[in-house]
Image (tube, rainbow, N blue to C red; front, side, top):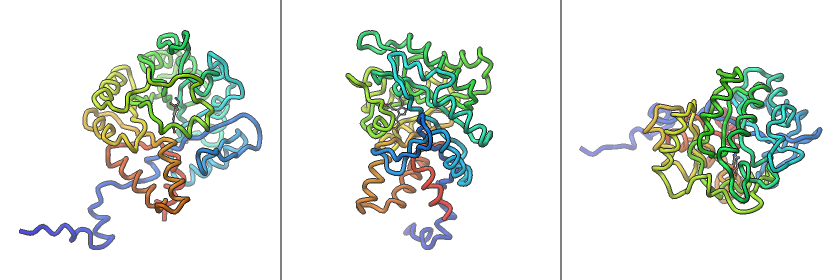
Length: 321
Ligand code: PBG
């Protein structure tokens, strides 16, 4: 007998009845860039409608996040001074540490997640401590520990290591536990690829490596099975949530991780993916509103339980319509 698939597409009522994936603001985490200074809400040149905020300007955006029903933010700090050890990253009075306290004062229930990495804080722009031109894995771990604990001390709910050093989840878990932060969770950037899609972020954070690239620590975009090895390793080491990054051109990896683990899966819809969509929409090449919802829905359909996205505010508004 002829199957008439169109019966279930006849009108919005029936379509919504059989819809398999429903996006909500609960799915989103909004990345925020915080800077030193006062009165700053400055648009980032490489990322339309994304801003650098000074602490005194955070309240406005945090209230918007809360009003829209978004449950979490992930913080990126841009320090005034960078050095070879990235020492501002573990300064208890550093920009991220201050931002955590500020946000917790505005609302203690909003989830505050922090990116733990060194590239925004090192003068050479690499994600760890250098020995010559090589990023020293085990030396870097000691610093990641210090950064994670200082974020936890400031009140972070969740630590998200994005450096791709081997063994960082285990050592951060141990350090958090020893410092009395057993309840602070770890969302690991488990399958983080060496991607050209981070371009606009590196302008925003002024964190492009001053020489070389990140190929000796971030993953080769050509690899799928390796992603599972990285994910399993992080689960073994104590990760609470595993992440795939980027999202848009790595949806097969999101699905792979979803099918092969019982962990919550996060996907990071990164800066390059974001800015491409915004610029194409500005030019009138695509319908921006529809593209945004379609892309985010696709990420959820691929298996993402959590989507970290610069579109979080506008997408949440679109969903309320
Ligand atoms: C820090 C970090 C980066 C991103 C998130 N955490 C930059 C990088 O690895 O170069 C990229 C996020 C984005 O592009 O939106 N290591």
